[in-house]
Image (cartoon, rainbow, N blue to C red; front, side, top):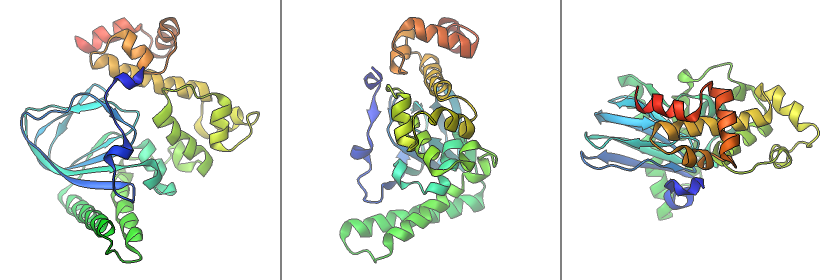
Length: 278
């Protein structure tokens, strides 16, 4: 089961009422969090230092001005050999304004910003931090939540320059956006067409055409792609074929092998060998 891979849950890690927690991140050499996934989103903003962040088995350099977006469909860990610090932002799906969900869904995992943009991001982060403190202490103004939401939106807009303007999700209506975010978190589970249609609030008979129109592929192909991408990340991180199969939501090895070869062009064993011995 995918639950065998360490997971951090939103209700345990995001105590603030707004669904957005911003903490100062200070990582010292030698400290390391093992490979894991979580059922919420994180946005890391690096202010200083160096290191390596592995996201879906791909290595990314950590340096000043770096931004890392981690979705529930990603697995990751940070190398423990170097120091860095910055802001560590954790947020739930519900905290994302509807009109910005396309940015979060389509943006790449990492980007780099200049000094002017980094200074602005620091101000937004500190505003959210102080607002959450006032809410927790019961001394917030009546519009404190609106101020926090505004500054959080400005943080998300920093990702907009790295997001395709013609991305499908940016043009989609609220129904499909809600479903896509649900799939990002729950794709490992058995989500039938009927259940997906209910989440999108459309009739099951209309759902296949509705999904293809908005996403550009069939519902099942999209779900299989999410699972295969996750399996690739697991294989590239050293997990066994069996663990990668069942952790990604497949019910049998034979089905997994068939779908993997169709989508990737090679077998899972060959893919793992290539990734582990580049």
